[in-house]
Every structure is written in C-alpha cells, then in structure tokens.
Length: 220
Image (cartoon, one colour):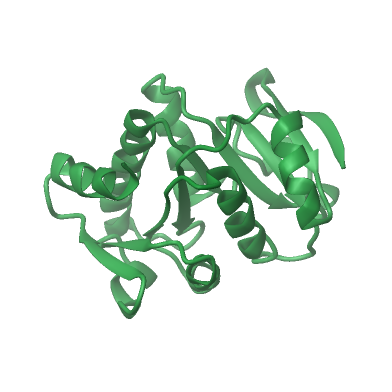
C-alpha cells in the first residue's frame, strides 16, 4: 500500500491510498484518517450521458443525498471523477460547507493515462486508487470499501440516473446485502431498473424534505 499527495485543480491537494488487495482496505482507511465504523452512503449513477431534462432532478436528488450525509454523520463513497453525479456531490459539499467525508474510488491506471487534475474531482476529501484498466473496475471495490467502513453500522446505495456500469454497481451492492434506493425521475437506468429483492424506488418529484426523511429512516 502507498499513501501519496495528489495535486488537483485550483491548487488543492488530495490524499490518496493505492491498494491492490482487499486486505489493505482497513489499513488504507486508518492511514487516510477516515473515521470508521460509520454509516455509509454509496452514491452511484450517471457520469456522462445525463440528458438536459434530467440535470435538474439529478441535482435535486444529489442535494438531498448531501444533506442526508451531513445530518446523519455518514460517509459517501463514489467514483470520484469530474463527471455527472460525482462532480455534483462535490459541488454540493463545498457550496454548503458540509463536513462529511467524500471518498472517490478510482482505478489507478487512469492516472497513468491523464493528469490527476483533469480526472479527479477536487471537492472530494480522499481517494482510494485500486487495480484496473477500464471503467467499471471500481464497482466491486466501491462496494467492498463501503462495507468495511460501515462495519456493524447501516449502509445504503443510492442510484441517481445511471447507465451500463451503474447496473454493475447495483449488483455488487446486492451481493453485499446493501439496500439500494433508486431515485425515479432522474432518468435512464434509475427510471428503467426492475425493483426486486433489496432494490426500492424513491420518487424525486416528492418534496426534498420528504425524500430526505425517508432515506434518513433507512440509515438511523
């Protein structure tokens, strides 16, 4: 395992841990000083491909999730790049001066292809870099890392919009027995995915405070 500082946009610097095995997750959390065990929200969904009409409900949904993390003292784990819901959750955290840890999980070979400052979202607080060569390699790791952080505490996955890779994200959460809440009305996969077993729908046309109260009841 390697701990390093990564320069990002606007002169910010992020601390990151490179890991190669599941057994290193616990040590990485300790070295990154990420508080745990703690309740966890796994945020998955649209990166590229979010249509114009879906952007407003996407932002509304992510705003609720940011508020949820802050009010419940939860940690958010996502894909950590400058795209879609990951950029939006970083903006929401910064705009509202929230303090919840925001952890991005990214496959390390991506940083060998391009500069980190052009890939990683500068408003995330920590990054965990994992093995992999293509998009989707992070899916299983996001789920494992979230489970490790939560320990005996509750954790949920929230799907906002999303495409092909997001389906894998949901599948890995199901394998970890983590409930997934699909935000209907945010477009694409979130409006199409079949609700079975541990996958439940939440309607984003409801008042934000009602969505917040419902999701909070699943974490507390």
